[in-house]
Amino acid sequence: MSFNKFPAKPRYDPDDGPVYLYGLHTVRAALDNPNRTKKVLLVTPNALNRLKETGEIGKVSVKETTPKELDHLLGDDAVHQGAALEVDPVSRFGLNDINPLRLVVVLDQITDPHNVGAILRTACAFGADAVITTARHSPRETGVMAKSASGALDLVPMIEVKNLGDAIETLKKRGMLVLGFDSESEHQLKPRSGDVPLAIVMGAEGKGLRQRTRELCDEVVKLDMPGPIKSLNVSNAAAIALFAATAGRS
Image (cartoon, rainbow, N blue to C red):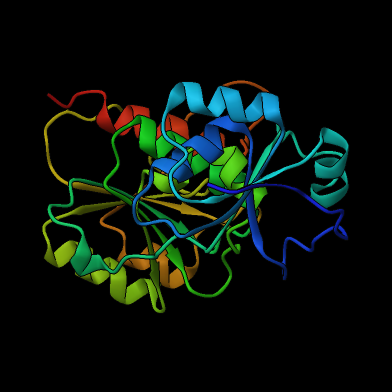
């Protein structure tokens, strides 16, 4: 393990530059993921000690830095806690790589990395087997997504598909009930019982489910919101959907 002074670098572009994961919890999850390619750990001495308290650092190159240098690199709004890990994007899976499939979250062109990260975290908490995204109109892996996911990016397989309709058809052939969420549906979501494999489909904020996606769902429901606010952030809606859909499971 090398330990060198980290020279100042220009601020990176999260949409085009290298992938930095930051925050102690997020970095710890990435270090523990054997399938993750780790390049350089930029870390303050204090943060390094805290990381060592929770597990091995491994063979990754370690470079000492300061909070100010990390602020400059990542941006003043990044809550890095003194640690940033440069990595390759996490490997994406195919539908045939995950077996069995009992609970899946499907994202229909959700592009906000905060929302995708938060949904990943919720999916992990509810024991989802995978999160499915589209190859187009989905966010690149960034520190923002990973921070919102709070480690789930390295715990829940992400499946990237070119054609979401074909993927939904495949899920149905594998015995999954496909449950779509749309605020325009006439049917309200109710707590479900039983252990039928379930795919929960969430649409983008504003646009909702695309027509083809909606048509392929076995059921389309809406969240019952009796209060004056009739819509929720999609990550909050996904959390409610996962709770209601799985509350009756053994």
